[in-house]
Length: 158
Image (cartoon, rainbow, N blue to C red; front, side):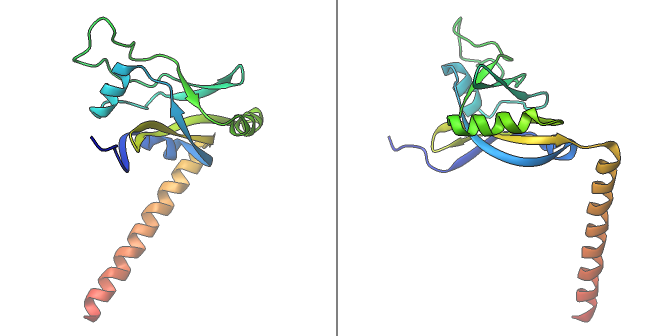
């Protein structure tokens, strides 16, 4: 049987880009049990309340919901448990220095399979204020309106 190739996105945290300003992103492996992998392969996961933290020189992912595998037995995993993330030591030190600065946090952006291995895209992010969110929304709406106006002008010229 040939190895899996390419990327398959399982879950994304769309609200994170709205609530946070993303500074850096890192790709980390995940230490999972067998039923967690099977549940992820079925496309079931939620990053809504997920966050990551550094404890004892290791990075942990917490509050990410991976539901129990339906075909599992007594070996099934708890849906919300701490999961160890696999990163190089230099990356952990860099992330640690960044998060010790004021206002920075670690949030998961997406879980995906890359060449058959479960990965998580982790972001060092700073929380947005309410007025920043409104301003970003207004800019997006203005850009959409200008694109529509340009498109309608092109259609009239044809």
